[in-house]
Image (cartoon, rainbow, N blue to C red; front, side):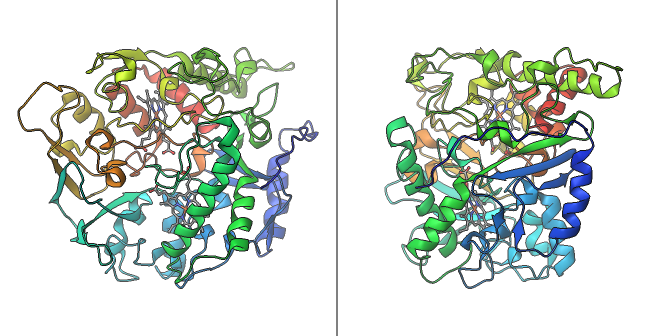
Length: 503
Ligand code: HEC
Ligand code: HEC
């Protein structure tokens, strides 16, 4: 088990321009090296992102970077340090161009719309090229409470017979989640399917996290890399120790400058020292340490910038830093109206079901301090898997029409009650592009429910949401503005975007 020791912040030179100089020097020396220096700065659309490795430089001889299967892929095919250990669609397209579609990323097993996709034919990889999506095939368990059929099947492989187990193998298309900042996870994978041991208790957290990630590494190797046998225990251990040593965050913003300047706490080193326990700051009031939920204290990275003024002059940088700080305050405290969310408005722990629409904030769902996932496992359906063409709830239809949906298969789910009208006896149909956790459990109550990811390193890994439906943060905020009836002003949107880009 890796031992994570707390380290002091390294002393930084005072000049703001040093990351640029460092970038130039390092780019020149590292291009073909086997080692990525810890904290190496990678450019992204709004600044620089970097990953701190508690074990020192990132050694690419680790099995994480090795091809352990049969199709030439490694973990780093989809989890890149340059992309905050995720994979941006921009990187996908550049890789496609550079290799004429021959990079192992485009292996037809899940790097094409369907397993019969032809390498080098861009139409067969349209979901990966447009939205950075990997196909995830999941077999509906026997005895599921609902039936599923495809009402829109653009590529012909929405539902295939499972060759081994029989049953229906359902194709969903998901973004790679970053393989970093893992010590803050409360669920592994969007649907939690690799949380083989729960991550909800401080006393078992560390051991269970290692168990889950070992299990995940095996599945990723036999799945994505099409290995015929599992990686060895030594390889699994090396992969998991490596992943657990990583902390990634944006650390320089083109407009705000160094994100740890003037008393601010952006960047990976502050995140490395961030305190965490399962349930910390729980928005539903169940922090095991008995601390009440504190929305205003959820993100506290840029408090010192609220009245930022340089000693010598006041200019655009100061104004931008104040925007970032204002965005942080909005994230913590800006009211929004939560309605028709599976996991909340049908959750009997919150009152009689259906739970009436209630006021919350971004932090109601993103409550882990300075990290932004949910500190207890709480998969939710906020509507991102609802296809606007098939949606009957006008609020969700308006919200999803703000997004740039890739052309995904649409599934019809029958046999479940309406969670927001439990007494109704009329047949209820759900249309979805991703049934979420219900594909594992077969339960109606899990339909469409997925976790909210850790919100660090966002700038380096667009597009957003599990299906990449928000091409950028503007689309994402336009979605939230409608979905939770926020009436955001343009200024508020700009502040929230400025803040999210610094994470
Ligand atoms: C072909 C692309 C691809 C490859 C190769 C790949 N992954 Fe992933 N990874 C994904 C996708 C897609 C997800 C999210 C899938 C989901 O939630 O259903 C993911 C999720 C994860 C997560 C979960 C993070 C979280 O927040 O829950 C971890 C950890 C991870 N991968 C590690 C690895 C490791 C280790 C390897 C190599 C053994 C690997 N991945 C290889 C695409 C890939
Ligand atoms: C009712 C719960 C809820 C509220 C309120 C909420 N979110 Fe989310 N958020 C989620 C869930 C669940 C996801 C995952 C959705 C998906 O992947 O399809 C998510 C995803 C995101 C993502 C994308 C992360 C990624 O890696 O793709 C961002 C960014 C985000 N939320 C920001 C915000 C902001 C900003 C607000 C407030 C304006 C907010 N959220 C309010 C639940 C919520």
